[in-house]
Image 1 (tube, rainbow, N blue to C red):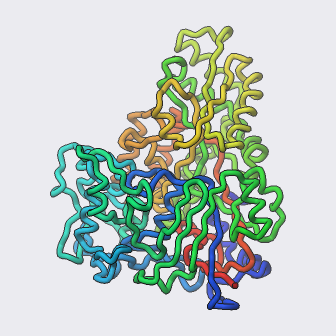
Image 2 (image 1 turned 90 degrees about the vertical axis):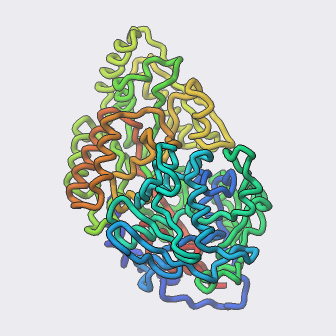
Image 3 (image 1 turned 45 degrees about the horizontal axis):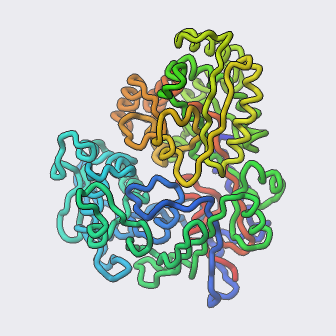
Amino acid sequence: MNKKLIALLLAAMMLLTMLAACGKKSGNDTTIADPAAKKVYYTCLGADHANLNFQDNVDTPSETPATYCMCFLYRSYPDESGLNFHYIPDAAAELPIQIDEHTWNIPLRKDAHWNNGDPINADTWIYSFKTALDPKLANRMGGNVANNVITIVNADSYMKGEGATWEDVGIKKIDEYTIQIITENENAQKDICNHFYSREKTPIYQPLYEQCLSADGTTTSYGSDLDHWMGCGPYNFTTWDYDNVQIYTKNPDYWLADLFHWDEVNIRIVPEMNARVELWEKGELDDLSPDAKTVDIYIDDPRLVSYGSLYVDHIDINCKNPNNPICGTDAYRKAVYHSLDRETLAKSVFGHMEPAGWYVNTQAGLLSESGLTYRDSEPGNRIEDLVNSWGPYGYNPDMAWEYFVKACEESNIDPETADIEILYAIDDNSPTWKACAEYLEQQWQDIFKGHMHIKIVTYAGMSATDFKKTGDDKWDFSPNDWGRGASRTYPYTCFYYYRSAYSGSPNNYFNEDFEEQYDYCESIKTGDYNTLLEETAKLEEIYLEHVIQCPVFQDVSFSMFSDDLVLPVQTYIPGFGWGTVYADKNV
């Protein structure tokens, strides 16, 4: 597979032929055998989400109920060709209206309402955004409201309690059905739409939220269950049997109801891939995303399609473990970096992934005005050449040992007698990362001459970020993957979560030069794109010099769909996906 995603788009017609051969309908062919029959979409999630407070919940699975059961100001919608997408107003009445270089008005629908019939108006959105940014609540997703695709004036300062008041924030009520957004930089209309199509920017129901708020205003039970939450989307969240099943039923009163075809969405929580495969083989799922252990079963199946994702899976490295003084040195981090045989790990352990000794993902830059991805650009290629000059994808056992010796000396440890134990923390539902640890333990016996070994520490029932908050002495390594949708337009933003400015950062290692360079990229993001690519390369160079965290492979996603599913697109569309929320079924 070519890891450059742009090639996948150029091959769209080939994919169309493949899908047609499988009996799948094209985006323009929506013939349904029996339109009166009940249409149920059967799918699954690998894990449930902690709650429905989208402003604070960092769990990726929470995107699903937000997409189906909430409204947004704008939604992405497929073009008639099925080869691209555009933004349409959802709770907004029309696309954003530009007032000047930094100011946009968003007119609101007068017929938008909550599931109980209460109106959704300017006060709803002002309350929701102010709550998301509330410095007392310190919502973990609040930073995405302040600064994602666009940067809202003074929002970050207000959220961090750094002097700005709410009146200083560039979110204003103009009248009952108009809000205004003021940005720090110039932005295109699609940037405004894109910014407001994410789960943390869905509205919250003020009367219920106030009831759920603690007396000191620092915590809330809003979204803890269906009785403490209010929906307002194309589907009603009717059943939530935690860690078992979620059921959404179509909301006929939703103002865009005609765009959504499912009568019911049935989502099972199935952590084990083997169980998902069994459901797929029995015809009880409409789609399947095989993992490393199962993709070989379907690798020659013509229904299987693949594409490079937003994620470069990596290992976060703790620099603060008091029991491991060596972990605070750059030399130690470089030793780890050069000890990873990424080709073997990507292909044999993780299965058909793409090895990556760099961080910027393969989709980064795809939605830029030029369409040139960072990885396909000269600066991106230069970084790849640098990495490969050390060894294949940065793997070099001799360099790993040299840096290990240096790290020991800097930490006053004798490298010849060192006995360093690495706490490798993984969710106990992560068999491939467990296999990775076992492979590294064996490999390190030769590379580090038996002086560094791994102890696997498992946890469950919480995110990796939350587990690491239980103590710096609990972990040394933690596998992770954090994708940033904005990087499809602005490649440098894939580093967003690894700065000290991000309160929910999954790592604890920060570098001043790295953060200054990120801020510089932020300041020029709407300027010349080629310049931005060059500055992104400098950011990646700093990242590699200090190993902010350790890349392992570029994630490749695999998907299969049942033959009776009618997708609204011809191929996977970066920034949009497969559009299953708009799909239909030949029943």
